[in-house]
Structures are given as structure tokens and as C-alpha cells.
Amino acid sequence: MKRAPLVVVVALVAALLVSYVVWGDRLLLMVGIGTDDGRYLGYVEGETSLIAPPIAGRLIERPVERGGRVKKGDRLFVIDPVTARAEVARAEAMLAEAKARHQNMLTGKRQEEQDVIRAQRREIEAALVQAETELKRQTELVARNISTHQAFEQADSQVRQLRSRAASLEAQERVGDLAARQSEIAAAAALIEQNQANLAQAQKRLEDLMPVAPEDALVENTFFNIGEWVPAGSPVVSLLPDFRVKLRFFVPEEEVARARTGREVSFTCDSCPAGLRATIIYVSPRAEYTPPVIYSQSARTKLVFLVEARPTNASTPLPPGLPVSVEPLP
Image 1 (spheres, rainbow, N blue to C red):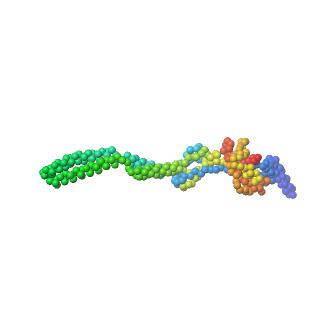
Image 2: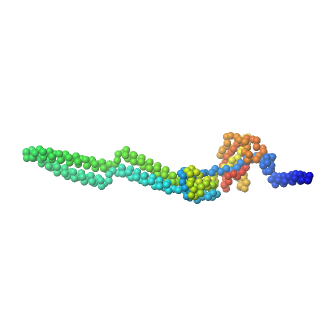
Image 3: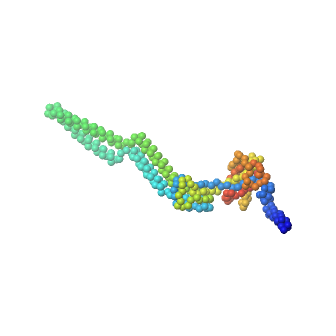
């Protein structure tokens, strides 16, 4: 019985020796008693795009699936567009009506209406010729005391009425050839612009109910199934474009001055090809303590700065969460 503790101790020491031979410095580094080689440790982060409809509705199509890939312009999903299409049709009809009214104001009256006025004017002019002849005859008869003054006055009144009627018809004919007043034409043109804006708005609403992929991307997740009701502003699909990944690593305080925006760095990751590089796009202005996920005894008590860099020559997409090691800045 006394030999049992000794056997356990021997087995534990043997296990540690075997682990050291197999894992080497990596094991010591992970448990916090080893030393690192000066590399900056970090990970890959993805910037997802959440695609959501601005209007609530029922999901009737979703041709994409989680984990699949889409090309730029591929349809992502369709929210029931019946109401939106009806609104587009109504806006198109109102625009057509406004254009017709504007055009009508520019052309004046129809030719048929003008022909009616001209015919009435010619009829009055013919009657006026006959009335003037009668007035002339009554003037001669009154001068010879053959006719009465009452007959003369009636003939004179008839001529005056016919002349006024002919002048009125002539004025109507001229007005009929003219367009509407300038203020009315301007109001009609403004109404056209208003209806064009309404149509564009209705078309945009319809387009938003059937969005397409803005870039080549990975379908990271889907949140609704066909037939479900989607509230306004709720994401239906999340996309991860290939170029929307970045490295997040931590540089010690004494070396952060070398990390400048636009500078290139080299990095490695498990099962990744050699020669990977990235361009620094952000350097945090605030220091922080080493995150607990960075197992480095030599940097654990030091201040570090967060740095972000965009991969520039990665031939395959880097999955978010993948640990990376960034070469020290020279």
C-alpha cells in the first residue's frame, strides 16, 4: 500500500516527460511557463452583412441556404410583393395622368372644338352682312319718311348685336389656339415631378422586398423560413463577403509605434499556405491588458494595443475565429 503513491508520482512524471517530447515549447507556452518568439497572437474576425426588409411581410421565397455561397446580384429572399406591386401600378397611372394633363395644357383646344367655333363665327358674319344691308335700307327709308324710326332702331340694334357676337367668337378662336397660362403649366409640370418621385419611392419599396447579394459572399446564417412572418427591419440572411475578414491581434506597448495604418505584416495560421500578408487598417488609441485568450506568460502583465489588418493575398477565405500569429514588426 505504501508503494502506491510512489507509483502515481512516477507515472505523472513520465507523462509530463512524454508530453514535453511530443508538444515541446507549445505546451509550456500554453500553461504559461514558456517563452514566446515575439509573434503577435490574434484571430480572424468576419464583418457580416445583415440583409433585412424595411417593411414587414410574409417570406415567400428564400433560395439561399446556410453555408452556401452567392454571387453578386443573386436573389436572397422575397417578401410578399402583392401590395408593393399594386402601389407601383397606382403610381405609374398617376404619373401618366399628370403627363397627359400637362400635354393638354401645351396644345390648347382640340381641332374639332376650334372648327365648331369657326363655323359659328362664319354663321354670325353671314347674318351680320344681311343685317347691315337691312340697316342701310332702313336708313334710306327713314330719310324719305317711308319707314318709321322704330324699324331703323331695330335694324341698328341687330347689327350691333351681331358685330359683338362675331368679335366674341373671333376672340374665343384665338384663345383656343393658345396654351394654358404659364402658372398652370408650371403647376402641371411640378405635379409630374411629384408623381415621378412617388413612383421611384414605390419601386424602391418593391426592390427592397426582393434584395440581391451586394457582393460575392458566404451565406453565414438564415433566420426565417418560408411562410414565416418577418417583422420590419429583422434580418433574414447574414452574408460574409470574402473581403470582409480582418485580423485582430495585439501588439505590446513598446512596439505599437511601429504599427502604422497602411503598413504590411506577415502572418501564419494552421493549415494555411505560406507567405500570407495583411495591411494594417486600424490601430487602437487605447491600451488594454492582454486578453485571457492569449496564453503568453511574458506578455500577460504588459499593456497591449489592438491592431486590425486586412488580408491582401489570401487565396482562400479565412474562417472567422481562426487563430493567427503575426510576425513582429521590424
